[in-house]
Image (cartoon, rainbow, N blue to C red; front, side):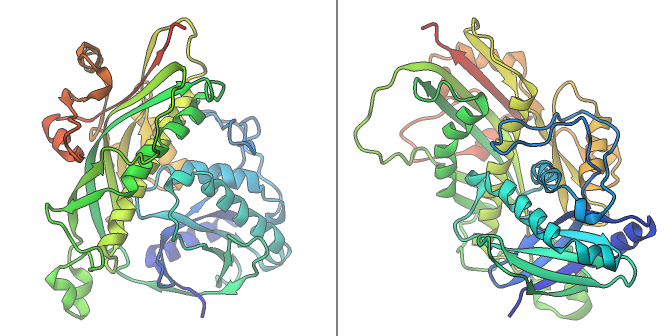
Length: 456
């Protein structure tokens, strides 16, 4: 039996808007998949036209597109000429903007029937290119992840939607039919929010000193991600059974109109992360060439459907934290070229996270904003990359703040600067540290990264 795909009614309106332009399109399918074989689709995002002088992502993942560059479009003349590498580049940009719980779960194409028929092989290539790009971020990949991905084919003449799935874990997989239907009141999402203190020290040894900075960071934060995977969570200050349904609203037990109109829940989460998961036996000695420290506090946000379990919700929030942390580091490394060799210390502010409300929905998407960027640039990115129209007043710009000079002085004035976050020192006698407690003591959120280069 194939998967069942439920799409929000607003998607039908979006498809009508695309058809009226008289052009063909490809794009990404945003939603949430479940192990029970049911997918929830919240948004279709058309891929922008290719930019001729903008570097697309290379196979090794080291060279990436400039974040702010613009150019004349190089739109292919037909769907069968659509560029799968450009689709993969768009994928990398969009996944950074999704909160926990939402993912890119497929692609869509809109075209007249003859063009669609000639592009079947290319659509499969695009789907697998998108998956390949997503799978590079192994830190945020679950072992039990659903590997079926959707291909939506929308006929611009008849308006018929055909939905098929491919198992992207199998390069030889064939298409399987899936049931597609629209559903009202699909935007009943439970929101989980947290603030987590980050304190990661990454020793750069002789073995990895030749890696680019991003690769060093990715290797270094893997242990934190392992610890986070074993974290415990308090949901509204209560320990919940992982197998129970997250939403316990009495209204959900009703039927008909009352059931569909009940307000979604907003839950606050405290994340308890083990201080260490290192079970590697005997220590080894390596020559330290430099040290990268990632310190500060980050805002985490995830959304799950009303049928989700506590385990589903906590996994979504963990994914959001990892995705947010890696996105900040990627963007920072794209923004800086090199670290000066003669400098003993360098302090960098990662971009801060901002949130925008998805129009006519309870969902939020996010972006990352550098200090030298204008708010209008964030608005433009939401339009260009997610194809949504938002105004500045609809964006939360101040849920985080960049690190200030006073934060740096507090860090360096400590006897051990690697163990302080927001003026609070971690104590090794605690098995877990509570990130949200620190967030409560600091009114705004600091997100910063600094690098110490040894003189040797």
